[in-house]
Every structure is written in C-alpha cells, then in structure tokens.
Amino acid sequence: MFGITPLGWVHTLGSLPAVPLAAYMFIKHGRIVPRSKAGVAYFFSMLIGCCTVFLVAHQPISPVIGAATLLLLLAGYIVGFIPWKGQAGLYLETIILSLTVFFLLVPTVSETLRRVPDSHPIVTDPQSPLLSGILGFIALALVVGVTAQVFHIRKRSRSVAR
Image (cartoon, rainbow, N blue to C red; front, side):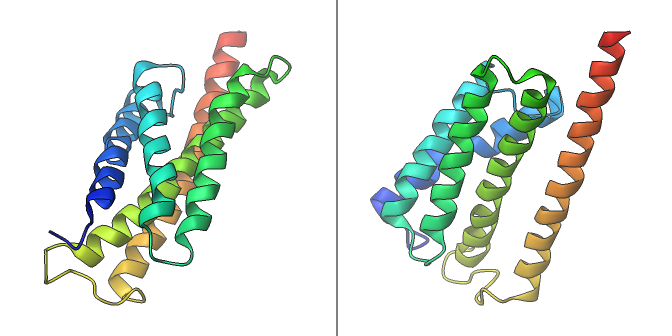
C-alpha cells in the first residue's frame, strides 16, 4: 500500500506520533517541552524517524535532512542540561526544537501528497505549485511561530522578574 516497504512502515508509524505530540505541546505550552512526558515521547518518535530515514529514503536530500534533524534533536534536548546557559538556553532550546518540527513536516507533507490517495496521488511532480505553496506556508509558519515563541518567553520572563 502506498508503495511503502515494511521498513518504511516502521519509519512512518514510528515517527508519526511526533506530529500530534508537537502540536499538543505548542498548544499547551507554546513550545516543545523536552522534559515533559509528551517531550520524551516526541524525542523517541523523532529518533525512530531520524534513524530509519537513512534506510528507507530515496531522495538525495533525505539523508541530509535526516542527519540535520538528528543533530538538532540531540542539541535541543542537551541544551537544557547546560548549567551556564541562563535564559539564552531556553531560547536556544525552543528555536532548535521548533526546527526539528519543521524538518519533520517538510518530508511528511511532501511524501504524503505524493503518495495519497494510493495510485492517484494529489501531487505527482515534486515541483508542483501546490506542493511548493504548502512547503512555503510551512516555512512561513516556522518563522512566525519561532518569533511568537521568543516573544512569549521574553514576556513571561519579564513578568516573572517583576
């Protein structure tokens, strides 16, 4: 089904929970919260996706995106444990983990539109205006979302300081 191998299904079903988990944390906390239950589940779901992408992806850019996502994921979860980071650490953690969501959504949307519905996909050409428009919207959402997160953290830290 959808031209996905058994290993491809492990990749897809293993990484799929990261999407609603990220959405949940964005709605509830305004950011990915790595040291929450949802944050731990997000980490492992993303880790499955990052590690299996090297075995299933066919596009030349896929291993680059997978490696970048893996590095960002690890950096985003490690930065919270650096004792000297101060407030900058929270900003850095938030921005880095938002980038992991972006790197998750780009191939997820692209692959979904190019595979669904089975045998009659919505998009057949990777240069499709529809696909380009949706990916552009995701990029814009990243910029707007990170900006909003930074302002929210800044506002919250100011109110706590008072």
